Image (cartoon, rainbow, N blue to C red; front, side, top):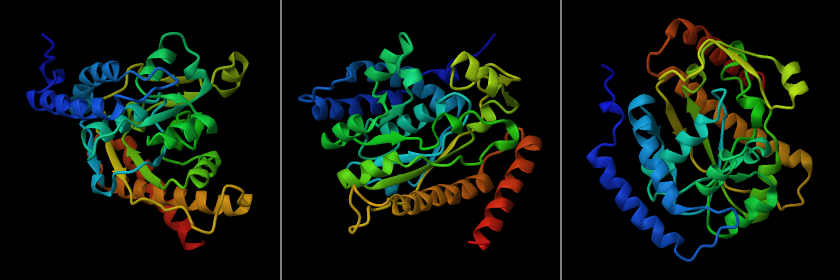
Amino acid sequence: MLNLNHLLLSPEDDLKINNIFHELREKYKDYKDPWGFNIDLCEKAVRKLLPVYRSYFKVRVFGAENVKDHSYIVTSNHSGQIPIDGMLITLAFLMDVSPPRVLRAMVERFLAQLPFLGDFTAQTGSILGDRANCAYLIENGESILVFPEGVRGISKNTPDFYKLRHFSEGFYRIALQKRTPILPVCVIGAEEMFPFVFHYKKVAKLLKVPALPLTANFFPLPSPIDIYIGEEIAIPEHMGPEALDKDIKENVYHIENTIKRLMITGLKNRRPFIDPIRKPISKYIIKEFKNKSQHE
């Protein structure tokens, strides 16, 4: 008989959730959210998902001490074919970072418009990723989660795992406008949830969907997940919202490289899981990054 005890909420986490959401209800008691954020639904979702975070993906968080008690634009790599990485980062900042916070994740329009799922993600903290929404949240003391690779980050074929796509730059304009520091984050392990992937990009375009992957498994495998939180990156004092594109690109490139370095550390230290596939990919990525760094 299938034993599901490992997917039950532990007494320790039950108590921790009670304490965290008591604190968060005080924080949000006077907050009016235009997108329908619901702290009670958020707590229910955490109670359902935390055993998956703890026992199925066995998430470890490194660098939690780097998170200070103010707003951030949390900037992460994107991986794993479906946006489970966003859920895991959000749980990490709720359960394994002090003080706990609900990250407001920026989502693609495609997801925001889906029946039921779009409403659910909005009520648990996610919103459509445009600049006005981000600015509003930061003005109200929130931290937001962005994936500058966009959907390109999760729509990678197996040989492209852990290769960062070019970062979009809109998030940095918001950071300049609101003088909000960047907190770089890297997720290791999400790629292996779906280890064999091929994307039908032309068919996806015809169907007007962001991605159309063909995978060997249709349910994510229990790949151990490590989340690395880097040191915050301050906004340069001399730069304002009207900064030149070349200056924006230079700073975004620095953030991208910071996440790459976290990625290299993570690839070296991750736990065993389908290693015959992962090790060659890891060696290639590390070698490529070192060669590129030497020529810069």
